[in-house]
Structure formats: structure tokens, C-alpha cells
Image 1 (cartoon, rainbow, N blue to C red):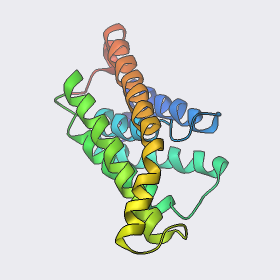
Image 2 (cartoon, rainbow, N blue to C red; image 1 turned 30 degrees about the vertical axis):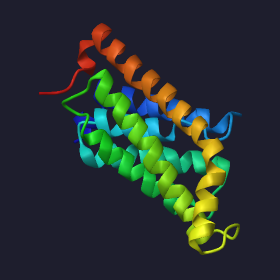
Image 3 (cartoon, one colour; image 1 turned 180 degrees about the vertical axis):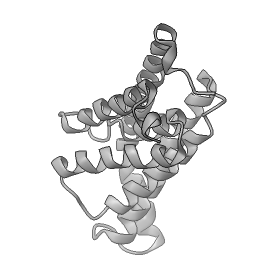
Image 4 (tube, one colour; image 1 turned 180 degrees about the horizontal axis):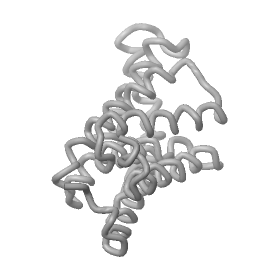
Length: 175
């Protein structure tokens, strides 16, 4: 286990997720953040499924320590874990189309989970179907940033790692 943790692949993937988390702390448009990309990337590239969940989650929590916690954190983390599991499906079958589809799925699922939680646990919307509809409708303008951020950060992380593997073959998956 220690050898796996100290491998160049583990260290590189971890550092890339940490670097992405730093973007959450910098000023950015609402919802234009690397959260989904971190989860997809970790799920796809960590050799161990356990580490694929734990390492990105710890890094997410550390960035939330800086940003602050709020009542939607359980929904955000639930969405994050679902996206990590989606990343598992990319482990042995990465292609542009599959990564693109996973990124769009991540955006949509995160939108649904977090906005449903806002309606269910927040105070802004009545607990009626009209309130739920209003909650989702009001969130639509923010979805464009979520989708764009997910596509940009996912593309950057997956693309950079694939390029790095060409230059540094030790980053390739262990057989």
C-alpha cells in the first residue's frame, strides 16, 4: 500500500486534484469550479477505488475549510461521490466521447442533487411542486457556468494527464 501511495502516478494525480481545488478558492464566476472534474479525474485515474474516493474528498474538505461550510454541504458531497463513481466507469475505457459524456452527466446530476437539496432543506422556496419548479427555474442561469466549468476543468485535467503519460511512461496504469 505504501509503495502505491508513493508511486509517481499517485503523487501526480493527487497534486493535480489539489491544484484544481485551489481554483475553488480563487475568484471565479458562480459555479465555474473544478469540483466535478476533481471527482471524475480521481475516479478515473487512482488505481484504488478507496483512494479514488478518499483523496479527492479530503482535498474537497480542505478547500471547504477555507471557503466555509454551509447547509448544502451534504448534498454537494453526495454529488461529488456519485461523480467519483462515474469516474470509475472511465478507468479502462477513456475516450474523448466517454469523458465528455461523463462530464455532462456530472453537471446535470450535480445540478439536480444540489438544487433539490436547496428546495428540500432551504428556506427560499415553498415545499410544493411550484416551489420545486421555481427552485430549478431560478438555478438555470447558474447551470451554464457549472457545465462550462466542468467541461473546461475536466478537459484540462484529463488532457494534461494523458499528455504527461506520453512524456513520463511511469504514470501509466500499473498492470
